[in-house]
Amino acid sequence: MHLGADELVETLRRAGLRATAARRAVCEVVATHHEEHLTPASIVAHLSGRVDQSTVYRTLEALEGAGVLVHTHLGHGPAVYHLTDEPVHQHLVCRRCGRTIEIGSPRLAELLAAITDQTGFVADPAHFALSGLCAGCAAADR
Image (cartoon, rainbow, N blue to C red; front, side):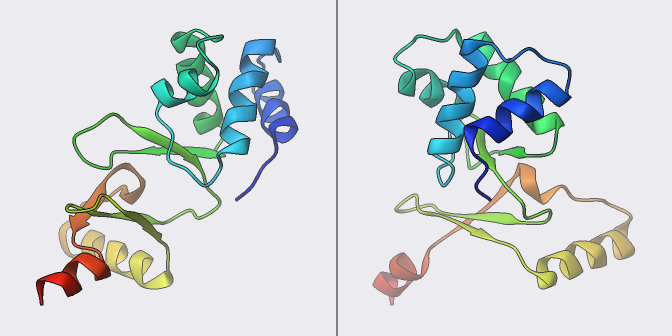
């Protein structure tokens, strides 16, 4: 999904927040780097420290609450944020090279539904990653 900064700012307004210069700057970074998984610290770095980290966190939280942004944990590091329009998707992280692949498919939704049917457990795939080897690293082991 690629929402522009103006659309993200409008999302904040609909959530009852003012469109401050700091919030707009955060939205511009998120929109510009929409294909990346951003940490709050990386957003602050993109802004050269012009915006306080607490403002970044609050803005990300508001965008996530509005359903246009999700966070996930790709391993042992900090949570990362990215725009999404895929309601059920998963992250695959190569433990060797660090490559991250997003997948979303009806089969993933079917698998999660089967887990729930079988166990009663309702998984939240957006908040965790599966680790293993990407195709390139797995091929190197053969």
